[in-house]
Length: 334
Image (cartoon, rainbow, N blue to C red):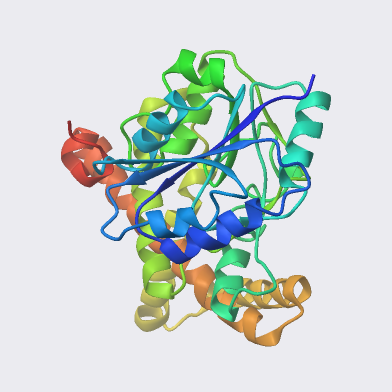
């Protein structure tokens, strides 16, 4: 039996990105799916953009007060008719076989939830491609975002994530977290004995942030969220989560060593790491400019995430603060 699909998109502003996403969805080889657009209190009118696709897509639009992406996805899920909920971020583009490949994978791979990879589109600018490399590289995230062989237990992310509607309802959907709500849901599924899988034919093109400043703020927030997730799901804590913080502290120690002792051994290791990132990025992207930018984006990612993780760990573990008090902007307040 052909599984029924509901695409759920929570969006705040991002009118241009929404147009590109809906354009890609309007060219699907399998047109049998519905789209639920949940406007999370946008400051601009998204309805004119959506009207452009009303004749080519089965699309339902809802507007609500701002609550963050997780609770907005819950809002859309309640109104979805499909057996499977597929969540994508508003800043992604999908290939024309996206829906077709989801349905094929569902029929052949047994799971309660699934996810797919993200990658850079050939039309992205150089900085976007460098950031995409950093977020998917084996030298930064271990490749867990883009390769099923990189993890034994895949953790779907909301930029490209599917869940059986009945399973989603049983676990209560996304939590009140504004940052890290997708790994929170994945681990909640595991704790309730539901299974997840990686579908290797449903990769999306993910724009992410378009400049290094916004990218730094984003990964800093991710770093802050990780110790919160560790408290909520202690059975899934990994030492690798602390690697960016160790990377940051090691770099600081390297400078202290150099200026106090006059020895550059530690910084030498960072120099070697930099060369490895450059040549690996060059091999992957085939572009010298992207490889050079990838060095910058990689260090931004490691330092910003590492600092966020360290700050959060100190506030939650040493100072014993509640996550809601330490990071009030990370949670929706009723």
